[in-house]
Image (tube, rainbow, N blue to C red; front, top):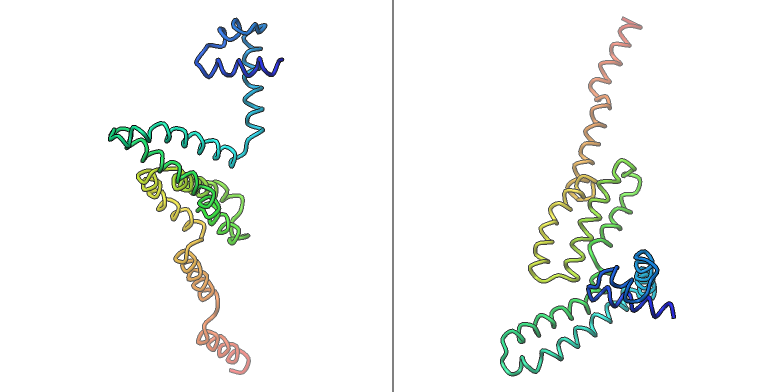
Length: 208
């Protein structure tokens, strides 16, 4: 069947066989036909999977690796002990990933952007997207990275704060904007003393 032939092509490709060799091995008409066969299988595999399915597959793989390493770890093999600990940490990160994604920094950032409403416009698109990318990077590290990787990602927080400040989305920036607005109002409004002087001048012109 064509589908079986496509899957065999992908299996050989995954085993580092060249496209030309796959063409000859499976009898494809040309190299392009072999490439298309591999693409068809990859596309079908991707369509049949979602994030939760992928996570479960990875958890099963980690479980298999753990079972293979665990007996040797119990016998005192230092490398296998480290391997089991590493697998356990990776497994816990995968299990925690959905909750961390749902309560991640990017979600909070999007709420902040929505809250700014009409105060941001098309001219701010690049700035808004920069903040979005920083949040996504931090969220990914928190959900999937090691402790060191998470720490490195958190170094991006000052850059995120700079974006939020530029957008007027921090308490200090909002206070500064409010102060500027008050100052502008006070500069344009006539003072009571100057108003009295104007009134006196008008009186003298009429009756003086």
